[in-house]
Length: 139
Image 1 (spheres, rainbow, N blue to C red):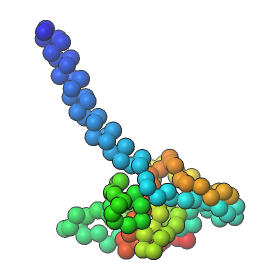
Image 2: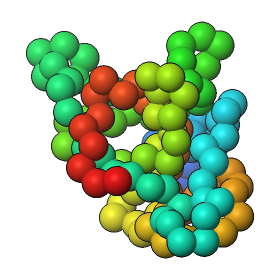
Image 3: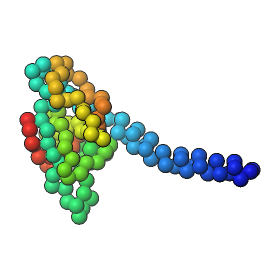
Image 4: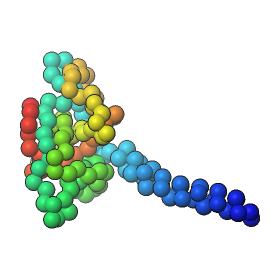
């Protein structure tokens, strides 16, 4: 094998190693077990409230797990939020909130009316979080 081919193979392997975690993370985010339902009213925003993540112990794990459904098992962590992250609150089941939250400053499209109830599919991230760590700021 020539030096050029060896260098090219090393470069391809390094690129694959860098991209692999991103592919796994996007696959985990894409799978939700209990949909976040939005809309249903032509006079109200698709998600009626907004909140901010608060109360996480920076000396503890410091994050709030976004779950694939409202609760622990059988649901799993699909993302993480931190103190100060803002979320749209789209529904609730007991102590669990159905949320939509921006990634990279995107407009999530849930601050306008959606006359038909349907599962949220993007462009932002979404899932379920425990209400103990969300302070309502509007809605």
